Length: 391
Ligand code: NAD
Ligand code: MG
View (cartoon, rainbow, N blue to C red):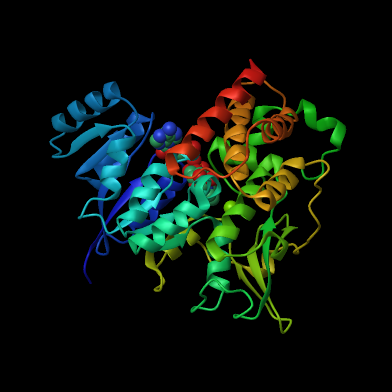
């Protein structure tokens, strides 16, 4: 088997660490060609010692110099650069066959786009890329000849539940609906009047998954599910009316496809991101992911309920943004990133997040940008606007 080169962007994060765990189980199949990390340089240093990449990208000149010196002292032959352009460059290197896009937020868009344009096998964890620039992104995938493989567990589950020759036409494949499951987050049963007082620690304590802080807060507000509805729209060419959200607190069913003949095909498993990561890495083959078999006799039961969009307005804001089109999803995302960061810094309450997002959606021009540059300007404008509402 030919060894494939991979770049792991966002290697120091939750998805990055899980990806390197799976890769380390298959040294004959994969060579870690490049790694990136933003600020946890000690962690990145350790990862470099273990995986020996030829290229590393950090978030700043100072951290790149520091890491470069330490790696040289350790006898490693590798180039260390920093910043967005460097990320785009390592995503498009000839020796890189596959790119794991696992940077958090819209910051991950340029490098994921670069991988798409370069025709890579693109393992997409960074859902914000599709939320901000879905149409542009999917065009880049098509034009670049990239193979786009969803890593988000729900989308990977849908990918596995669709016909293998699915071409983006729900009707032609006899599909009625895509059903995205949601755990409901840590506040699923919390009364509305208690939500404004929840703490950062409570919001980041997800019942089933261990994830980065931003996506943990998104899961608590249900904005994560809203972003995933938008992500599913672009990945599977599904109109919003044919994407259902279903709360399933045990997170055993990771999502489903409902067919015209009454069949429902679902993907099940333990809530462990190494499963969708391994699936995307090896597709169409299957490899060991280090995940224990699901023991059905130990499951206490699978339950389902409708999401509560009154207590969790972020989900309905995301559906509305997708319906209205234009730049609405990009504005929703930018305002949400600023609001979540402010919540994590304890500058606003949990319940201020949807208020700030709705405010941005009502105040920023949502008409469609004609270029990526214009879209990024809109993103920046929204960030500035929402920041002024907080300060
Ligand atoms: P995380 O916060 O744990 O890690 C984020 C990574 O991005 C880190 O390596 C960090 O150094 C890097 N990074 C942060 N800001 C950056 C910037 N401005 N420029 C360059 N790099 C930067 O996040 P995560 O939980 O691993 O999530 C990563 C992405 O995967 C997100 O888009 C998230 O929505 C998606 N995702 C995560 C999970 C999960 O289980 N964690 C599941 C599904 C999807
Ligand atoms: Mg998900």
